[in-house]
Image 1 (cartoon, rainbow, N blue to C red):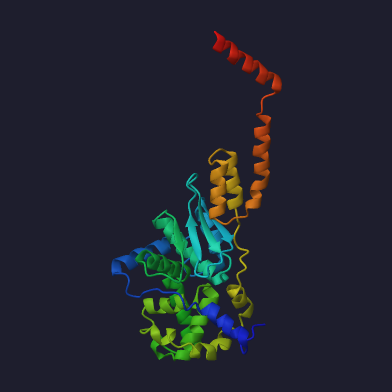
Image 2 (cartoon, one colour):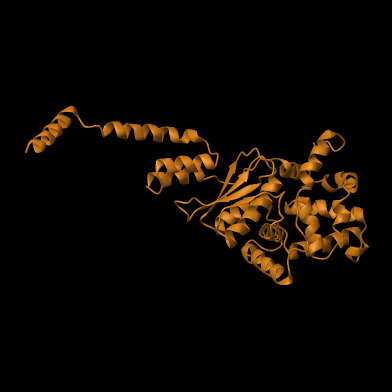
Length: 315
């Protein structure tokens, strides 16, 4: 049960509202917006444009992109959400590494954000959703929002919502109704609240984002109404548990070493950089030491070789 009256509620609100996201409404011209929308539609067409993608994003992307793999790692930096890692020695495979200290809702959005970088840049990228002043980062976030909540899904949801509140147009709804809509979309489509609010602004349903972003009192007041029927799903979204990815990086790195794509020292560097568990290397260290011992020449061969060398010098 979520304690909406006590301190747990404040922690929930802080994590779930994602006040650190920055989408920069005026960052793009019309051509850039059309390109982002087109790419988002193309890449999720097979899934459908109205069905919630949310936590299914990990398996959906993996099913479409045979060389993209997801990994979950512990990073202490609270501003690090994810990064795109391309092993230099076996660069067909790409890893989207998620910070498992972030809430699941962050991990979902960060996966979509990094997917854009994979599609457009195919280069190493570190995603900190607290620092999106770079235009390419803003494009990646706009793509992620469109990918998780496409126009069609947003329009259909608003049509159903207007029927429920008995209004004919969005502009007729009061602030409380809009807040409840935002939380409903956040929970149903599983993307951060701030991304939902900006999606409403991007599609011109609301005119002034600051009305909703600068004052969270109205959120606290109406929050319980919005999640009362969806507490289990909401609780999962703010948890950092993510059972929806199949981690393969350990296996792939070890296979790369076994097949000679990387040396042992290169493998060590990759594992250290990715903060993976270095204990997986123990059997390989022992194996290498054993091989080195095996390569030691027997005494009688050493003596025979030494004699030949001395004979050749005398001649």
